[in-house]
Length: 595
Image (cartoon, rainbow, N blue to C red; front, side, top):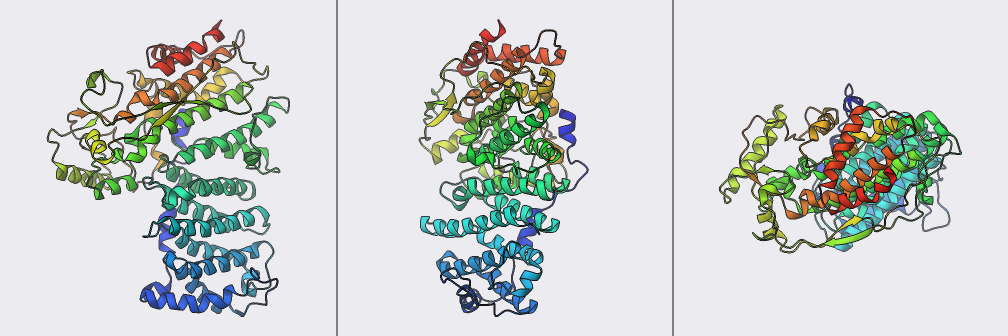
């Protein structure tokens, strides 16, 4: 199974969705002075927007009668969608015109030009190229501007949802255009390091939700090509610092897993409790083959979820490197404050996988999951902040030059690493102590809540008699669970294959570095920030250990479990019992299941 994961889409080339969107978003008006383009937009868009039947009960036939006239107006609208939000009324009119025209794929109004009604697919693909301008972050990041932009973006997303759900004439090329558009706007808004209250944070959950819904509809109507799947996987791996991504991943996985088990084991097999909103993610008439294919592919969209406890991996993306190179405060990409939520993200990912394991075992789930949060407030680091010597702490090392003032050398090192990636050579990143950064940037970190269970589960949770064999469940989730349970130990060689970055996730030109392959000598190690040491990831590790316990306790009499899984399980138990409070508690809570 691990070998298959590493080889997924390895023979396919991904689509440069974001770069293509950037190339196709330009209008001829962009070659003119900005004021001239704005004046043209205002003059052209007003008569078109006033005849849409939005503010009036009826509308007249469009005055645009030829392809040439429509394409000329589309050049104007393309420029208008990228205007500063101070021109909110003009941008709103551009959005309204395109949304009404796009509905020609369903039931067009009389105000829609005839040529668009005759070939709505071609025109919709062109409109999507232009609508990318609307989602681009603006220079003015005031709350009012961001709210106005978000409202307009929501209007476009609702229209795309409506068209995808109701239209019966969407061509395959148009489905691909919808998916590439959604991938491009997600990547543009979510790939950069997250900043509170920016447009990406405002739209994060919404654009991910629409991407998931439309992607599943496409699986039903026009199954995406391997190149699109590979593109989705590559881009999603650069959004993993967003907690909403893992939330959406968990929802989709649970919904699809429930459907898979229903047609594999019959309607009598216990079903997972899914919210009403999530129950509509999977189209009702979607074939079993499509469900199975989409389930397995989406399950592996995030790559290796255990990487979520490795800030030095999550931050190895072009956007994080760009921020580090342009910032005086951040020397290493993994120093960005937004990565402080990784312990919560890792916990959510492991909890989601644990829930999938329970569904496979037929373990009944509670109606409402209410984890208890234990606040951990991280004050600024001092020399006496920990009683454990630095070299004995459970953490991972980075490189530290002995001169803490040599920032110029660090920036040069970053540039050198980026250059080496382009030439195919991967080198480690040299950086200063992140604790110095946190002292300068955030004297007091916000309290971070680490979820943990509050009460012991029943002695033996009821299992479905028709549940799959333990080996089958371990084939699916074992590599992730074992690796998560053993993070920080010297037994990670058990999962060396799954630890290595998946080369199929990246194009040869991708600026994603792999710090495991290095030809440069390692320098002195330094500590990462206190809120990113491995102790903070113990809740996620505890979930992995608990899930492994439930799998092995589901063994039937006479059922054989592969020796390699048994040895890894005993190693995980030993390491868990010697670890932190959360791991010991989770193992002890499952002790009755071994009786």
